[in-house]
Length: 415
Image (cartoon, rainbow, N blue to C red; front, side, top):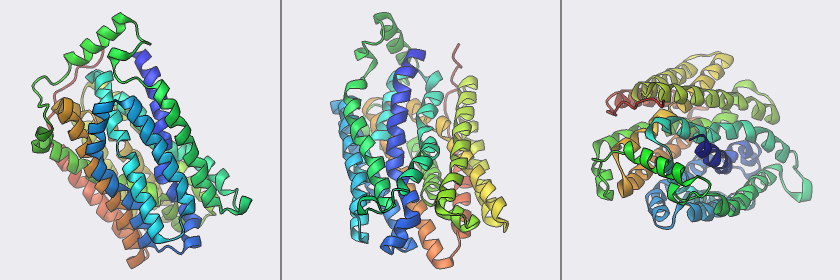
């Protein structure tokens, strides 16, 4: 298992860093881009969230394509596509162009995350999955830590070759995805059966171990995924989580600036703090979840803590306390990720798993649209973030109640 972890996780982590940077670098660019292009909060929020509409629409078809042609080819294709589209953000000069590029970027990225989650059900036995998911998904908050200094350097290129700093940011963070998409074709392996970097004995052991913990009675047909009550419950929970994720990810620099009145470069530096907290939270929660074999209550506690932190941030008038509560909410909501993604593998197999995982993530993508758009509308109407933070906190508490109703087998910790 150590060999599998080292072969797959670091490279997929790097790919997801690029994916997430290309998705949320808009938040760093927005500090100057909104002013240069004259975008209102509503225009920015709608464009930031539109990514998730196409993301939701194309997730299930994208995962079914992955099943047909294999993750190695599919991930290489879509990475190259989203790197190109992210770079074209530098050409945007109107709301219509902004909306179009964000929509296409969402369609290009739709197959990556659910495809990797599906692949992990082939490579990691149940007792190792929370850590595997967490080690992969920490790329999202880690991209905030990694991306902040990179974005700062790129923004400082302002004026070079006649380009604004925010345009250099999109170009500089889009090109690596194109290059890594080409590399992915040669590095990734579709399944354990094809893993020549494992010995024959290791391949046989891994295949048998994954099969031994597979849900043999689970449905395999695609239609079963959409008839499963548990899939709908998980979708509702992930919707609320995604509202929180992307309200924070795509508005955090703007919220920090409104609370601190710091310079743009200092704001970007401050935003690394909640992402660093999120990385630590994800690793600690996932490690304890795998160690104990317990999933549901780890998820529940993280959702409750994050919801209460959102409410506290909305309620306090002290800017520093509001910021601290917001940072805590980020750490807690990211901590829920590892336990959450262990649930679908307990419920579904085969094509049903591909469709179910993609469907859950696509409903989450609708939350990804709702969060940024809600923030934008509230800012334009009230000139404050408090109402949006309050609504997000309540959503998370409701999702915690839903999570408490989930049923999952207790997983034996690895020996």
